[in-house]
Amino acid sequence: MIAYTTLGVSDLDAAKIFYSNLLGVIGAEHVLGNERIALYGYDVSQPMLSICIPYDEGEPSAGNGTMVAIRAGGPEDCDALYAKAIELGATCDGPPGERMPGFFYGAYVRDPDGNKLCFCQIGPS
Image (cartoon, rainbow, N blue to C red; front, side, top):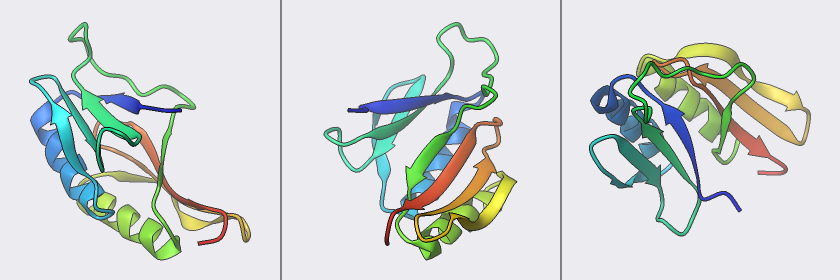
């Protein structure tokens, strides 16, 4: 159902470094883009995460309550993405752990532009 989700960024080159390194942890890579947008995933037939300079070229803003959840795999994969994000300059917005025992494990960060990300396992790993 979802083709891609977009996050606004203020510096596309810096954001591409952040997301290329971060999403490389789960084997995702830069799939396509141009001078103001970059899309990451496994291929264009699967859901992707896009980062872009806003169309109006104004400051990007992270919505209150807006978050992108990235299916990471098991808890160890969530932990690895969380650690990589922090290493790359993200800030903690909720450390890794079970939120719904036996069903949901998540780790939360804010990227350098303030966008909230969740790295999660939903259901059995």
